[in-house]
Every structure is written in C-alpha cells, then in structure tokens.
Image (cartoon, rainbow, N blue to C red):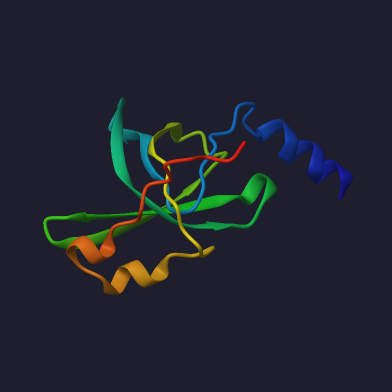
Length: 117
C-alpha cells in the first residue's frame, strides 16, 4: 500500500488551484485532435468537490445555448492545464445541485465581497 501512495504522490501537482464550491472558474483543458494539441476554455460555476488526494475532482456547470453542461475535472489530471479564478462565490452548502433546477437570475451565486483571512 505504501508503494501505491508513493506513486500517487509523484503524480500529484505541486501548485494546486484553490477552488471552492460556488466559485466561478475558467478551466484550461488540453484537447488532442489528431497529432495537434490545443487548449480549450470551460468557464462555469463549481457545484461540487469530491474525494481527496490523487483522486480529487471538481464539477463545473455552465449553461451553453440554453442547455446546462456539467464537466467533472480531476485536479491532478495532466489534461487540466490550469484553473483561473474569475470570482469567489458565497454559498452555504457543500454541493450546489439545486442550481440544476433553476433558470436565469435564480441560478446565480452571490459574490463573496469580504473574504475572511
């Protein structure tokens, strides 16, 4: 079991993005098309964080052309180039699955104006 932990620690990224539930983020994802590789942006609200360690993931939701799109990103994946924080959100829940049932302004997350240090 210790050998698995050592392998997992080698695969973990050094600088982790500080992503919390309710934040609006831009995720830079590496997309491979044939032999070429490009970076695609996926911007949305973080509605969930799962697990921990090497298998930690976060779910980002956005509405594109009237259809809700959710993607789950492993934090330590090599295909996730970087995660930019657009704005901090102020929420009172650990999972924001209730946003799936809301449309328009009701699906907004309040912005955290004062961050406690």
